[in-house]
Amino acid sequence: MQVSIAKRMITQEAANAAVQAALSNANNNGWAVAAIVVDASGHMVAAGRSDSAPAAVAEFARDKAQTAVLGKTTRDFAKRMLSSPELQLGMINRGTLCAWDGGVPIRENGVLIGAIGVSGAAGPDDVKCATAGICAIGLCD
Image (cartoon, rainbow, N blue to C red; front, top):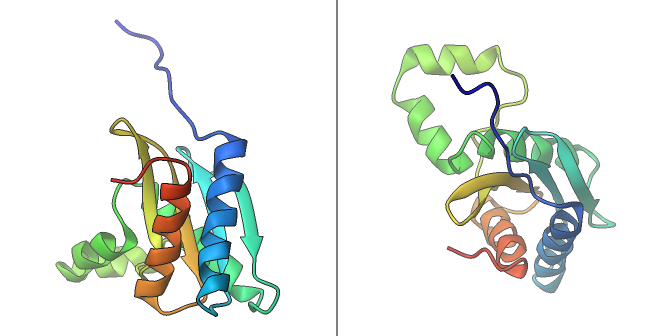
């Protein structure tokens, strides 16, 4: 019987770099966003917010990251939730789940090591910023 497992996690250095790249991408496009990276257990590792972004978007970004750390993008999560009334009802009871675009898992060599959530722009633009963050640390798909 195996008693324990090793779990890989994103480093703080990589998480900070991903957040900064996401914010830079947003700034270059005139979007005011928040970006948050969580580790594979869903705990926040790094966070940042554009100067003009409302504080509430940081909470949305956190929820998107915590949803994406389940292993699918928040877009895919939304599709799954829409497939079943029971799943939709269950989501109401889970305060940190978010089905809006902008949450993307972070994988290294196929292993989930964390997730990034971006909020504040339009959904597809949040995804662009999140993807820029992931690419900045060399983990583009």
